[in-house]
Length: 352
Image (cartoon, rainbow, N blue to C red):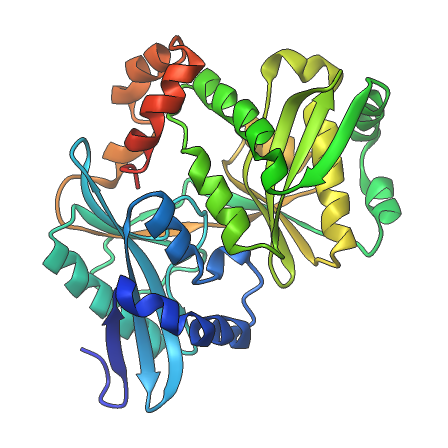
């Protein structure tokens, strides 16, 4: 139960658009640097992934003291889930104090019961101790790099091997292009093929168009071309202090010409140009290949603590590393890319 001076409201899709300016101002007041913490993501996922958005709001009088954005995910294949928030690697409770944070979790647990979901998932970085959150996932970490003031300083911080790989990319007739919607087709072509190669259902193109539309001053695309053909691409989203890459891909057969290394060098330089303090490479399992790729740039691990209120099943059942999905992954890797672009989006939007 919330303390007597706290009021918790559960707001639905019809309320969200009118409340966004106040919510964005609250997030700014908290000093949240991550672009993943922006409440505007609720509208992106509702529109492009067909999720039902909720936002729990904690108030003391007229003052907002806490927010918990959530998406209700429904799928005939996988069931029902309540997540804060899908696709992004960090999220969950944002509150001025512990009492407001715990009251928001009380409200989220009640909502999870009412919606009869399998579990509530909160993508925290620091755990909140609450009796309902009896399960957690800590196997992954955020890989973040503190950025210097200039790209020259960043270059000097790299080990010789990294600098050599970037130079090789610069010598291989690769061109770098920045933009938004005009580059979306090229980005999605690379992204969809890479997801197929990984054995992962691909998000629909509309998700990335929605990000660019909802964050016109913060989101952009980077494309690397080789002989006028796109071979690598990334979505870059800048927050007030931190830049994130929610999606990035490169075509494997071009690994030898270091397209991915050249792209990340330019992503980092772009972030420095925007006067960002931190570059977030995304989450990785410790000592995995992606972890080592990010570590070579100087990125350091930051805890990721995903907390769960489980009502049915287990949190591991939906994890991609679950052994039950190994055969499905191998089958998916053999499908034609156009087919994966057709059947992938309806599948992946039901995965928390």
